[in-house]
Image (cartoon, rainbow, N blue to C red):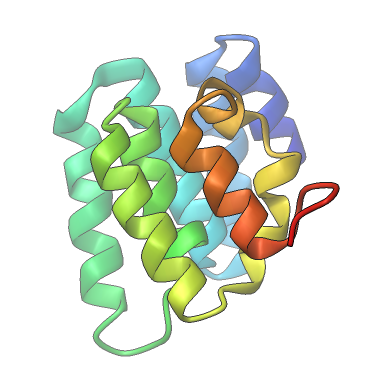
Length: 132
């Protein structure tokens, strides 16, 4: 999946999606690879294709746990729907989603780093120096 993330960061969405084909196959459809596919589709094509991924994640969530950060928060981030992304991040914090630890390093959150809501979220997670 790291290759897909790097390709996405370089704007090579089609190559990122091809890399995710292997990640999906090898992981058995792990929610992280499925979510990353939705994020890449959102960045590349907007809500149409990403919506299908959201539907698939919601269906899978009926049968197994789908972590909010991993499975859902990244999709609205890819669409630059900040309110929806923050709503999912709040849900993730409420259930103590282990994937929250990646907020400080995952480049998909770079556009959010100066948003006061993001800073406050990181502080509540105690991911920032001097957080109380």
